[in-house]
Amino acid sequence: MKTENNKFAKAEMLIRKPVSEVFQAFINPEITSRFWFTKGSGKLEENQKTEWTWEMYGFSLTVKTLVLQENKKIVIEWGNPDEITLVEWVFHSLNENETFVSITNSGFHGDTDKIIDQVRNSTEGFTLVLAGAKAFLEHNLQLNLVLDRFPKGLA
Image 1: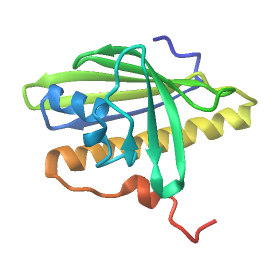
Image 2: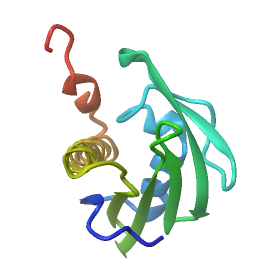
Image 3: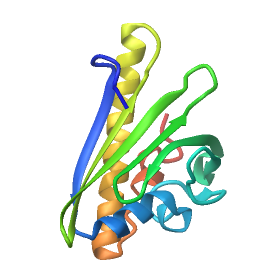
Image 4: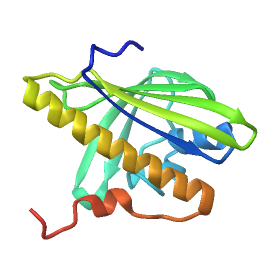
């Protein structure tokens, strides 16, 4: 997918696990819910919609999977109906036990300040997701990074 000028967010991380394990962690909600959202309506499937829920925030959204190339790439659309963006995961197998994951979120809309805010929030969010995935997949640790990003009682 082509990103729109410089209006995109990017986060990348080396995860020391085989590409098949890392790929499954992002399409299978039973795994993803250990480091990102709390519930998914099903595995990602090309040209299908899936609901992801963050129960701690009382928030759900529908994602549409546009591309699903096993162990290589995932592309989804997500966001509010008037602010749909694309998220693309690219999985690079460096060797049998190392995978480099690149996540790009593109298609932001609005004035410059709004786009900067969206890019910053997305970069931060996907960095936390990748760090959580790394901790879980490599060390079986649940760091609660997404849960603890917005603790109750803080404005």
